[in-house]
Length: 197
Image 1: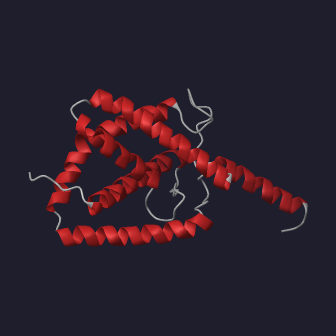
Image 2 (image 1 turned 180 degrees about the vertical axis):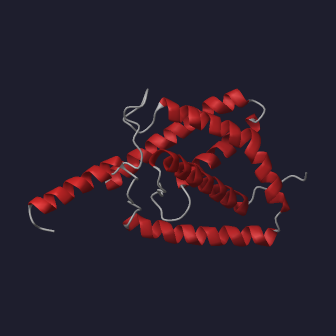
Image 3 (image 1 turned 180 degrees about the horizontal axis):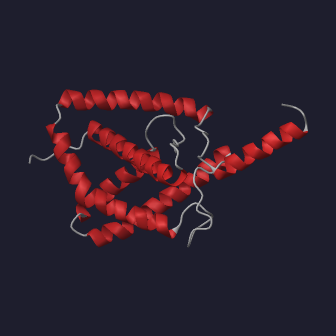
Protein backbone atom coordinates (compact mmCIF):
# COMPACT_ATOMS: atom_id res chain seq x y z
CA UNK A 1 0.00 0.00 0.00
CA UNK A 2 1.31 3.44 -0.86
CA UNK A 3 2.23 5.76 1.97
CA UNK A 4 -0.68 8.00 2.93
CA UNK A 5 0.02 11.69 3.14
CA UNK A 6 -1.69 12.81 6.29
CA UNK A 7 -3.28 15.93 4.91
CA UNK A 8 -5.95 18.24 6.30
CA UNK A 9 -8.84 16.17 4.96
CA UNK A 10 -7.31 12.95 6.39
CA UNK A 11 -7.62 14.30 9.93
CA UNK A 12 -10.98 16.01 9.39
CA UNK A 13 -12.54 12.81 8.06
CA UNK A 14 -10.92 10.75 10.81
CA UNK A 15 -12.31 13.17 13.41
CA UNK A 16 -15.83 12.75 12.06
CA UNK A 17 -15.55 8.97 11.76
CA UNK A 18 -14.49 8.79 15.42
CA UNK A 19 -17.04 11.36 16.61
CA UNK A 20 -19.86 9.55 14.78
CA UNK A 21 -18.70 6.18 16.14
CA UNK A 22 -18.75 7.65 19.65
CA UNK A 23 -22.27 8.98 19.08
CA UNK A 24 -23.41 5.52 17.95
CA UNK A 25 -21.69 3.87 20.93
CA UNK A 26 -23.27 6.21 23.49
CA UNK A 27 -26.67 5.99 21.81
CA UNK A 28 -26.54 2.19 21.84
CA UNK A 29 -25.51 2.08 25.51
CA UNK A 30 -28.37 4.33 26.55
CA UNK A 31 -30.83 2.52 24.33
CA UNK A 32 -29.90 -0.75 26.05
CA UNK A 33 -30.04 0.72 29.57
CA UNK A 34 -32.82 3.35 29.29
CA UNK A 35 -34.78 1.78 26.40
CA UNK A 36 -34.96 5.12 24.61
CA UNK A 37 -32.92 7.00 22.05
CA UNK A 38 -31.00 9.87 23.63
CA UNK A 39 -28.71 12.26 21.78
CA UNK A 40 -25.92 12.33 24.35
CA UNK A 41 -23.98 15.23 22.94
CA UNK A 42 -23.94 18.97 23.46
CA UNK A 43 -24.40 19.38 19.71
CA UNK A 44 -27.49 18.54 17.63
CA UNK A 45 -25.66 16.54 14.98
CA UNK A 46 -24.81 12.83 15.07
CA UNK A 47 -21.34 13.22 16.54
CA UNK A 48 -19.64 13.50 19.91
CA UNK A 49 -16.57 15.71 19.48
CA UNK A 50 -14.92 14.36 22.63
CA UNK A 51 -14.53 11.01 20.83
CA UNK A 52 -13.16 12.73 17.75
CA UNK A 53 -10.66 14.79 19.73
CA UNK A 54 -9.65 11.86 21.94
CA UNK A 55 -9.27 9.53 18.98
CA UNK A 56 -7.19 12.05 17.03
CA UNK A 57 -4.99 12.59 20.06
CA UNK A 58 -4.41 8.85 20.37
CA UNK A 59 -3.71 8.50 16.64
CA UNK A 60 -1.19 11.32 16.66
CA UNK A 61 0.62 10.12 19.79
CA UNK A 62 0.32 6.34 19.68
CA UNK A 63 0.36 5.29 16.02
CA UNK A 64 4.00 4.23 16.28
CA UNK A 65 3.12 1.96 19.25
CA UNK A 66 0.64 -0.22 17.33
CA UNK A 67 2.83 -3.28 17.91
CA UNK A 68 2.74 -2.61 21.68
CA UNK A 69 -0.93 -2.95 22.68
CA UNK A 70 -0.23 -2.98 26.44
CA UNK A 71 1.45 0.42 26.22
CA UNK A 72 -1.39 1.69 24.02
CA UNK A 73 -3.90 0.44 26.60
CA UNK A 74 -2.38 2.29 29.56
CA UNK A 75 -1.59 5.52 27.70
CA UNK A 76 -5.13 5.53 26.25
CA UNK A 77 -6.56 5.07 29.73
CA UNK A 78 -4.62 8.05 31.02
CA UNK A 79 -5.06 10.44 28.09
CA UNK A 80 -8.76 9.78 27.55
CA UNK A 81 -9.53 9.98 31.27
CA UNK A 82 -7.78 13.36 31.46
CA UNK A 83 -9.75 14.54 28.42
CA UNK A 84 -13.05 13.29 29.87
CA UNK A 85 -12.39 14.90 33.25
CA UNK A 86 -11.42 18.24 31.69
CA UNK A 87 -14.39 18.23 29.32
CA UNK A 88 -16.80 17.33 32.11
CA UNK A 89 -15.41 20.10 34.30
CA UNK A 90 -15.70 22.67 31.49
CA UNK A 91 -19.30 21.69 30.61
CA UNK A 92 -20.38 21.80 34.26
CA UNK A 93 -18.84 25.24 34.79
CA UNK A 94 -20.28 26.66 31.55
CA UNK A 95 -23.84 25.30 31.77
CA UNK A 96 -24.09 23.90 35.34
CA UNK A 97 -25.22 20.56 33.91
CA UNK A 98 -23.60 17.15 33.88
CA UNK A 99 -23.79 15.31 30.60
CA UNK A 100 -22.45 12.22 32.44
CA UNK A 101 -22.09 11.30 36.09
CA UNK A 102 -20.10 8.38 37.47
CA UNK A 103 -20.95 8.98 41.13
CA UNK A 104 -21.55 5.60 42.70
CA UNK A 105 -19.12 3.87 40.31
CA UNK A 106 -16.02 2.22 41.75
CA UNK A 107 -12.99 4.54 41.92
CA UNK A 108 -14.67 7.64 40.48
CA UNK A 109 -13.18 11.13 40.71
CA UNK A 110 -15.81 13.82 41.33
CA UNK A 111 -18.23 11.78 39.22
CA UNK A 112 -16.42 12.87 36.04
CA UNK A 113 -14.30 9.75 35.49
CA UNK A 114 -14.20 6.25 36.93
CA UNK A 115 -12.14 3.08 36.67
CA UNK A 116 -14.62 1.24 34.41
CA UNK A 117 -14.64 4.17 32.01
CA UNK A 118 -10.84 4.35 32.01
CA UNK A 119 -10.60 0.63 31.22
CA UNK A 120 -13.11 1.09 28.38
CA UNK A 121 -10.95 3.94 27.04
CA UNK A 122 -7.89 1.70 27.22
CA UNK A 123 -9.60 -1.07 25.29
CA UNK A 124 -11.00 1.43 22.81
CA UNK A 125 -7.52 2.86 22.28
CA UNK A 126 -6.10 -0.59 21.52
CA UNK A 127 -8.96 -1.29 19.12
CA UNK A 128 -8.45 2.06 17.40
CA UNK A 129 -4.64 2.03 17.10
CA UNK A 130 -4.05 -1.66 16.46
CA UNK A 131 -7.06 -2.56 14.29
CA UNK A 132 -9.24 0.32 13.10
CA UNK A 133 -6.62 2.90 12.13
CA UNK A 134 -4.96 0.61 9.56
CA UNK A 135 -8.43 -0.13 8.15
CA UNK A 136 -9.23 3.60 7.99
CA UNK A 137 -5.93 4.21 6.18
CA UNK A 138 -6.85 1.62 3.52
CA UNK A 139 -10.32 3.07 3.01
CA UNK A 140 -8.99 6.64 2.90
CA UNK A 141 -6.40 5.70 0.26
CA UNK A 142 -9.15 4.33 -2.02
CA UNK A 143 -11.28 7.49 -2.01
CA UNK A 144 -10.85 10.08 -4.80
CA UNK A 145 -8.94 13.16 -3.68
CA UNK A 146 -11.69 15.59 -4.68
CA UNK A 147 -14.31 13.61 -2.78
CA UNK A 148 -12.18 13.55 0.39
CA UNK A 149 -11.62 17.29 0.36
CA UNK A 150 -15.25 18.07 -0.53
CA UNK A 151 -16.62 15.79 2.19
CA UNK A 152 -14.24 17.30 4.75
CA UNK A 153 -15.32 20.85 3.87
CA UNK A 154 -19.05 20.03 3.99
CA UNK A 155 -18.71 18.23 7.33
CA UNK A 156 -16.70 21.11 8.78
CA UNK A 157 -19.25 23.69 7.61
CA UNK A 158 -22.13 21.74 9.19
CA UNK A 159 -20.13 21.25 12.39
CA UNK A 160 -19.18 24.93 12.69
CA UNK A 161 -22.82 25.99 12.20
CA UNK A 162 -23.94 23.42 14.80
CA UNK A 163 -21.23 24.53 17.25
CA UNK A 164 -22.20 28.20 16.84
CA UNK A 165 -25.87 27.41 17.48
CA UNK A 166 -25.17 25.12 20.42
CA UNK A 167 -22.77 27.59 22.04
CA UNK A 168 -25.95 29.51 22.87
CA UNK A 169 -28.48 26.65 22.95
CA UNK A 170 -26.76 23.37 23.79
CA UNK A 171 -28.61 20.10 23.45
CA UNK A 172 -30.29 19.70 26.84
CA UNK A 173 -32.64 16.93 25.82
CA UNK A 174 -34.36 14.63 28.26
CA UNK A 175 -32.14 11.83 29.48
CA UNK A 176 -28.81 13.62 29.11
CA UNK A 177 -28.37 14.51 32.73
CA UNK A 178 -29.90 13.25 35.94
CA UNK A 179 -29.22 16.66 37.49
CA UNK A 180 -31.10 18.36 34.64
CA UNK A 181 -34.06 16.05 35.12
CA UNK A 182 -34.07 16.66 38.89
CA UNK A 183 -33.91 20.42 38.29
CA UNK A 184 -36.80 20.19 35.78
CA UNK A 185 -38.95 18.26 38.29
CA UNK A 186 -38.17 20.85 41.01
CA UNK A 187 -38.96 23.73 38.63
CA UNK A 188 -42.28 22.17 37.59
CA UNK A 189 -43.14 21.58 41.27
CA UNK A 190 -42.27 25.18 42.16
CA UNK A 191 -44.28 26.43 39.20
CA UNK A 192 -47.37 24.42 40.25
CA UNK A 193 -47.12 25.44 43.92
CA UNK A 194 -46.73 29.12 42.95
CA UNK A 195 -49.56 28.80 40.38
CA UNK A 196 -47.22 30.48 37.94
CA UNK A 197 -47.61 27.95 35.11
